[in-house]
Length: 224
Image (cartoon, rainbow, N blue to C red; front, top):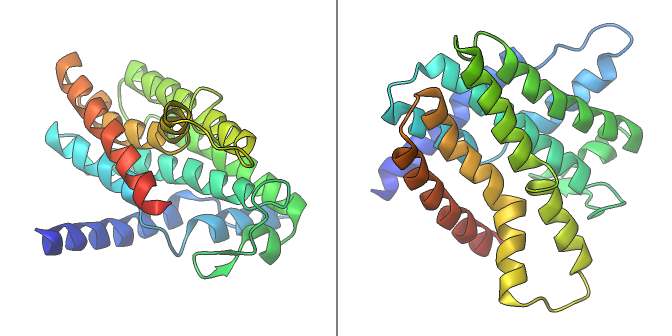
């Protein structure tokens, strides 16, 4: 089983690398530097766990893989943006990420901030385009759910709790809330996205949500 999972994850990594290479902007013109930084931050590494969950959840409901790949790419752009900003001196102040210099070290802080901003907005562009799904209501729901998962009530809010607790000893309720927002929210979206695109029932979506919430907590516990 572990071998099958590892093989599937590696296939997703290779597939998403190709998809992201096609969907990220190419460096050109006087703004080329920000495109270079976007690509540097997103390509060439990462477990692609979130993308894997999106592809697999969509597969359960017969969603076209090309459409799922666009949604998975959008999610990876949001994840990459969060890492770029987290690594900045004002946040975690990290010099290395995935075995190479962080984006602000490779380029500079201003370019890293702009690259993160551009990756976040590019994610919603990908979701809003008709190629992602023919139904505009589905595309709108994808945008809504990703915004909720990545904003103040999700990943960003979780990062704020994390920073506020840096020199404290938070209780279990706070730790659980932190992890569900900072890491779990995007993982829940990843599992739910395929169901949204496949127009799954509420019962099916709830089952995936509960699964992803527990997976997100387990993932962060191992990562920490």
